[in-house]
Image (cartoon, rainbow, N blue to C red; front, side):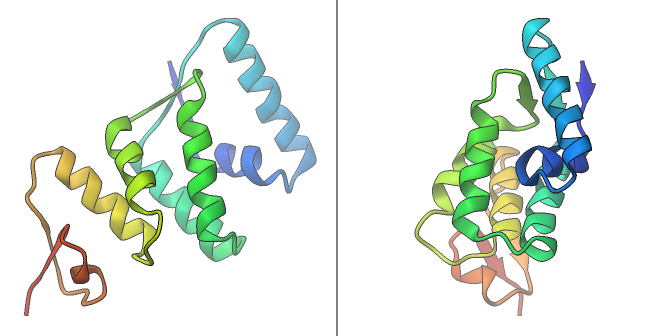
Length: 132
C-alpha cells in the first residue's frame, strides 16, 4: 500500500494543474484495475480542509461533499475512517470550524470525552471543553 500526500487529493478535487490532475486520474485508474488501496492519514485530511478553505476558498458544503465522496472511493483507505464519517455528518447544519470538528471526532474515536481548548467558539460544541 502507498500513502497519498495532500497535493494528490487537491489535484484530484480541484484539477487546477491539468497535467498533474491527469496523472492522479491515471494513478487512481491503475489502483482500481489492480485492486490496490491508497492510504490517507488524518493529517492529510486536515491539511486538505485547510488548503481548500484558505487557498482555493471552496465553500464548506463543497468541502464536506468532497470528503464524503472520497470516503466512498474503494481505492482509498482512510486512517480513522469512522471518525471521518462522523465528522462529515456532524458538520452539516452548523458553523463550527471544520478543522476543530475533525480534531474532536478523531479524539472521540480514541476514547476522549471532550477536547480541552481556549477557543471560545469551538467550546460551544459539546465536543469541546473551555479552559478559562
